[in-house]
Length: 258
Image (cartoon, rainbow, N blue to C red):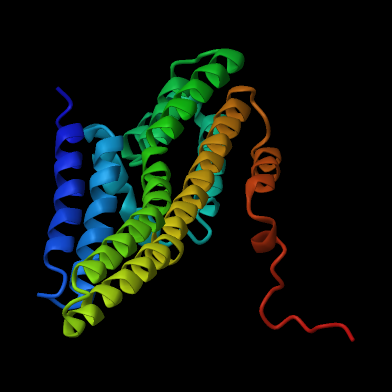
């Protein structure tokens, strides 16, 4: 049995019920947060298997990691490898492969050392890159789903708040709490979706696109080494993968023409 299905339903329904039950006894912000955030989290847990949930949460750290000029070191590494291979042969790359921390680049170097034909090498590495990209999709899908559920759960919280108001029509002092929960739940739902969840999904998509670009660069580089191209030609080819804005950035001290 997929435990996330049962766990998600329990968390989602339980959070909404508890938030509605606590309306009027706790601050409206607490009840609304319990309804919206708890309900959204429960819905997403129900949707995703445990394996994808774990991957999505691990990818959250990518949002805060800087990737400025992330491709530049890869270009330098490939060019260095091409010069070493041209001077001492492909077997000279064994030490470079052992010291490489990135699994995909290390795999590319190992395949290059094995002496695979460049066509076979490219096909093999592109399959590996595609598999790696598939493993990175849970993060954006997770936060996209939260961004989709949160506003709807917020509306549900607003309806529950209004129900609480209708139940307390005979007690005017209790009306304010129900109305507050209704409005706060809507704000929490729409706000969390558009200020947190959807931007996180978009940021992860950009990070994944950069990572895929890096894999393409590595594939192109090792295949060029296998074809025996000149290191300078390889460097010029790989620099086409760098971000245009960074490659065309004016040097410090350069004067603007009037």
